[in-house]
Image (cartoon, rainbow, N blue to C red; front, side, top):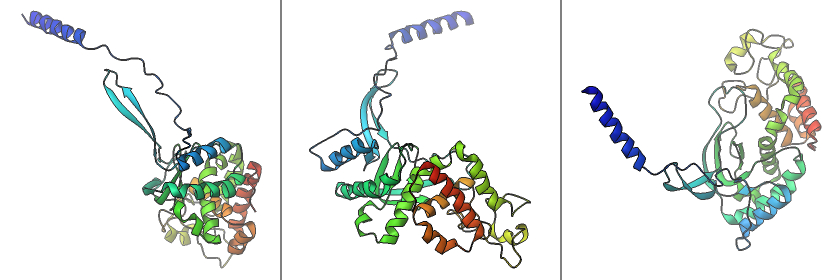
Length: 307
């Protein structure tokens, strides 16, 4: 009896599924390359972005939703798919501490785009090696991020650039810092490439050699007095004394929480000011100048024209 009930139920299920619409298995153009800019001569901002894209190969957007497409799910139901730029931080390695994240942003206006493109052409593109791939750039008004401030953030398939409406009003020092932040976001992956592992190990060990009982990274600063050894007599154990530019941007109580954060901090400082300006700030800090030299070696090899 139980077997008969089972067979009857199976027959009903088979009849129901046989009447269901056959699943869709062909998905035309669903793997299209979205990171391109198509021209619209009637829209000045889009046309300007198109010309920049043709010149540089870098698509620039002022909205994180960069396209849409009518699609069908596996059962043939139609829906609208929206392609959105990903701002998830994409740098490899083990994340220590709170992960870098874009906390908030606001879109800029189309009228702000020409000045931003002019800045990129004049200040950024001449510094960017042809070997460095930039998937896209997103121009925004306000930008708040954990770890990387308000000027530039490296996402998975885009670099977000903030403060776009204020570019024309920036004084020289602000403009230089802005430039350094953008170049840091664009160049981080290239600098952290495996080919520079030997130089980077020397960079990391410049600080690590002073803390033998644990790692010098992610070190609680109030433990430095008891854990740091090997500094010249009379030298106070500070992050700067063992070669860090400062504490981690995510917490004033710790040294940089990871090696890549240390590199990012040096990159932004080295690219946002001249060598003479850097020496004026840190020339009396032997370990900082040593690590700066290693970063300059990598930038020189990449052919980044640092002053």
